[in-house]
Image (cartoon, rainbow, N blue to C red; front, side, top):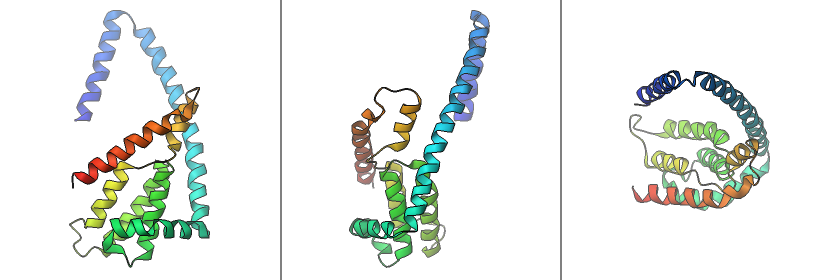
Length: 184
């Protein structure tokens, strides 16, 4: 659907710019937006690399094992099918920690790894297990204590108070988690 909507928007925008005599403004805004997009990508790349590195270092230390133990009761409650599989629990914990820290881009590869491990244990390969579905719900809700990526974006765009977003993010992610869990 979006592959039809976006081209339509682009065609309408160019047509309007041509007929209203604003083609030069359209061209200059395209180049300004391109420059802004590159600067934003470079800012986010630095943040992503930093947090991915921290997560890799944490994975090689006892910090993750301690956090897994802290999250263990929650994981056992949410994922009763995998109570005995320590590796999957560790992968889910890493993903949850990355999400809690607002590191969506760092959480994605960790989530894929956890899902791949759960699929290996899945006896019916063409059907999701309850644990896999719960994991998808939790990832989609992405409960965050520190929305690091959003703060980095707000900071790179010159926000006077980039951390002001924290409380609204808490409300939104809690509502998303509760709403998604109630729909099952």
